[in-house]
Image 1 (cartoon, rainbow, N blue to C red):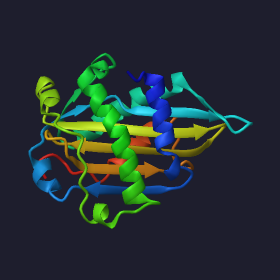
Image 2: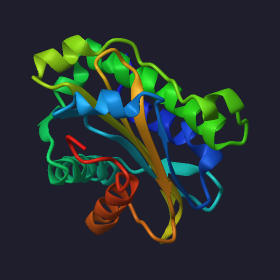
Image 3: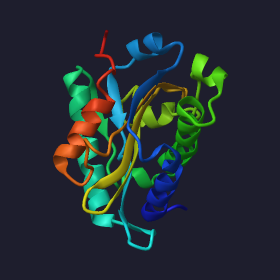
Amino acid sequence: MINVSQSILLVGLIGLFVSGCTYTSERLHPEFPNYRQTMGVMLVLVPEIGIFEQMPDGSRLFQDIQSREAQRKAQQSIVRQLQERHYAVQTADAQTMLSSELLSVTSLFRSVNRSIQLHTFGPQLYPAKLSAFEYNLGPVAEILKANRADGLVLALGHQTASAQPTKNWLSIAVVEPEGRIIWYGLQGNHKKFDLQTAEGVTALVATTLSNFWDQGS
């Protein structure tokens, strides 16, 4: 079983190839409008966000307290953004995240997230993935049913910093009951956002979700 610290270390490694630059974009499943219209209640998982301190020898030191605080604030910010778009929201707490079903989903999402970034943002672009954005985490209907929801929201993030951030990114995915990722947003700007502050987390979440549609639209 992967513990929280190991998961965050994996998140940091997964996002290294998109770090150190500014980027913002979204990816939509070809049937996004149809899937999204069926969603009224979102289950928001605890985001996996890792904050690392850049050491003088080039190594990175995982910051556990800052990472947990960024996770907490990011989940709250995602909830608020969805509520402003007229969704009802359920949240998973830290204990719920330890269920075997959610551990499986979040583990798979780390791998899928890397593939999405690598093949639809670069550097190893796959034209087929750009023309038809189709990624699947496997059925999550039972998880949603148990939480009285019809859409799942996952997030991954990373920041490396010393006194100021030198690289960061946040990705957010919305998943329908059969496991298809119907919407994916990626945002990164280490000069504009700082995941070590509440204001920075709130602003980065808001910007990442800025193009996600209102409920019922």
